[in-house]
Image (cartoon, rainbow, N blue to C red; front, side, top):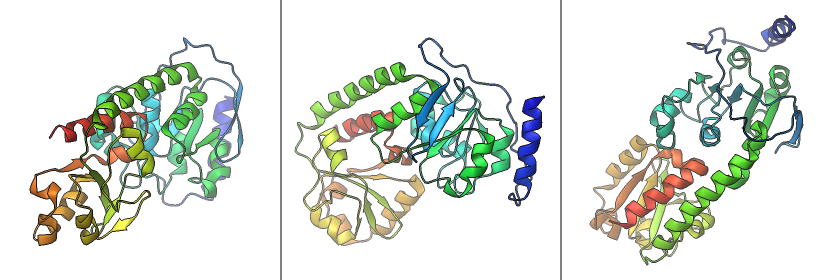
Length: 316
C-alpha cells in the first residue's frame, strides 16, 4: 500500500512536466529477471557515481532501467539484463535488440520493456516499470535528474572511461564485482590473443564513420595499440573529418566502416565513380568492409567482437 501511495504522489508531481506522453509502453512486463546471488555482497551500499552524486542502494536491484541502449551489453555481460531500456541516438531499444550484432547472442533471453528514445526520455514510461535503479551515462539526464530520483536511485556512468572501468561501475550497481573481474580477464585474454596474431602483419587498416559527405576517423591511438594493428601514415590519433583525397593519400591496405550499414554503403556508392576512390589499394583489392554500428560502444562485448572482426579482415 505504501508503494502504491508513493507512486500516486509521483504521478501528481509528473503531471505538470509531462506533455504528450500519455501513452504507456506495450506489453508492460511486471516480472523481474533472475539475479545470480552466489557472490557475497553487502547491502545497503553507497555508490559515488560519475556525476559526483552519492547514491544509496538499499538492496540488490532486480528491476534495472537503463536510459541508453549502449549499456545493454554491459548488463547482459553481467548476466543481469535490465527490465527496461531506451534506444540510442537513433531508434528505440527494440531497434537495438533487433539490429545490434553485439546483442545477437542475447536475443530472446530476456523480456525488456521498450522505453522509447534516449533523446526524448519519457518520464511516465520510466515510472510505469517501477525500477529499483536507473542507469545512464553522466550528463545525459541533467535537466530531469530531480524528477528521476523521485522514481528510483539514479546511477550515472562515465562513458568516456575504459570499458573495464565501466564494466566494474555496472557490476557495483548489482553486486557482481567478482563476476565482472573474471569477465574482464577473459575478455582481455581474447583481445591479447588476437593482438599477437594481428601485430605480425604490416598491413595498414583505416576505420571510419561518415556523415554522408566526409570520412570520419573512428579508431583513436588507443584502439590501434589495443589490437596491435597499424594505421596508415596520416591517419589521425583522434577523431577527425577527412576528405576522400586525404584518405586516398593514406592509401590503407584495408578500410572498414563502423556505422549504420545503409549510411556507410550509400556513402561508398557515391564514391564509386571517383577515380581517386578507385585508385586506393583497399578498393582495388576488394578490402572494404562494413562493421556493425554497435561496435561503436567500445564496450566489453563490442571489444570481443572487434577482435573477431579484425582477425577476419586480416585473413583476406
